[in-house]
Amino acid sequence: MSFAEIIGHTKQLAMLRSALSAERLHHAYLFVGPDGIGKRAAAIAVAKAIHCEEGVNDFCGSCVNCARISDGNHPDVRLIQPLPEKKEISIQQIRELQRDLNYRSFSGKRKIALIDPATLMNLSAQNALLKTLEEPPENSWIVLIAANSGGLLPTVRSRCVRLSFAPLTRQQVAAYLISQNKTTPDETESLAAMSMGSIGLAFNLKTEQLFEKRKDWAQTLSSLKRRDYHSAMAAAEELGEDRDKTLSFLGWAESWFRDLLVYQATGEADELVNVDMLAEIERQAAEVKLDRLQACMEKAVSAAAAIQRNLNRRMILEDLLFSVVGAP
Image (cartoon, rainbow, N blue to C red; front, side):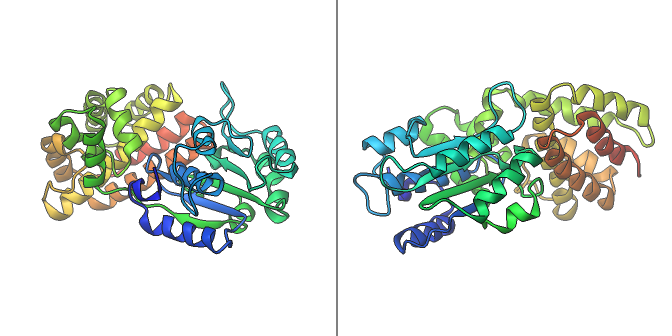
């Protein structure tokens, strides 16, 4: 295993490797991009390159240090995420991280912390992290990983080097799915289209059986009539019952409104995400005006970010669905 085997993100990895080889790796980075496209994998790859016993500015994937990083038990590499049954990263977790970063490295190399998703740090945790970002312990490396930076304090963002990761191509996702031998040819084509460049999403779509669920969601949106706010509120209550399901719906809704916009503009199906639902896309695209679709797509994106910050799901969904029913 090496950097050459990582799917996509060639430019980002080249920048990181160049900084690593020149010993100019910044003490803190912010990796931003859609979920499931490989941001954490890139950070872990750099961590392995730092600690690998065999590679030089690369990693073998099989030495003791690489194996321990893969297993999540290397003493100098920590992944910070919400604790089980918790919805956010607490100030206590950040304080523990700060103490750990100030200890001497076991390996004599960098102490590394990956915070994912960084937007789930509460405000107290973010403020506590500021001191570490402003005065980083010697020989430390911190990576904040997030789908977007909107949930982070400006002072936190400003102290990190931002590196944006783009979705993978449909062909890259399809090739990976084929290499894993876990999908049929028909599933591969559909999953690659619906993944929006996210291998993680492609596997979730299959394992969580969201193929059929998309049809239910499309029917829910289709059934909402103009000015029918009562039905919109009822739909918001149902869609907001479970946080993970709400996020799945919003991820799909973003792709749906995008498809309607693309089809309105081009009349072509080649670039559609939900290409297997073309008939419904044609129907809704003919009925809904452009400005309304743009507003709905923007609401879906901002709604997902708000729910990641644990704001009220029902109110957020009502705001989105009111946009669906509020204009002709």
